[in-house]
Image 1 (cartoon, one colour):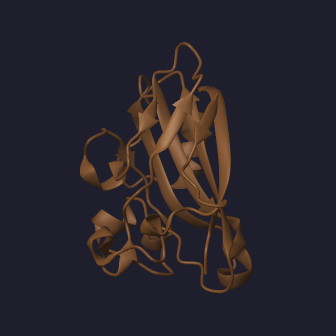
Image 2 (cartoon, one colour; image 1 turned 30 degrees about the vertical axis):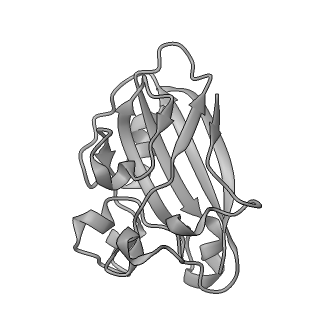
Length: 169
């Protein structure tokens, strides 16, 4: 399986991150998710899960920052469309991103349980986008955490594909 996230010179386009225009922001944070092409998913794919994490956040905040976690996207997709996290065009179960945790304590479900774009504070960061092809719908509900996704996916992963993209400071 392969995925393709749009990049320009290795960087995620500005509209999905720190330099997003006002109309692509909620509470001044970028919320328009990027499209993801999916190729060669294995037969038997019932659902997909998506994660986007920033390991370069560890020196800044002490832990990996979760930007997007979603599960139970339909297994017949060949692409996750732009803005799928906010638009409702693709059904999915929304996981908590790092803004939902105790450090930020974001109470707005529209931003704490959806894609939040890169806002690297110190230097360009690498963002790891992974799509998992799964053989089942996972028993998760909106507001699940990344560790719960990994527990639920155990024994159900048919394939996974990762792309690392840069977000500019």
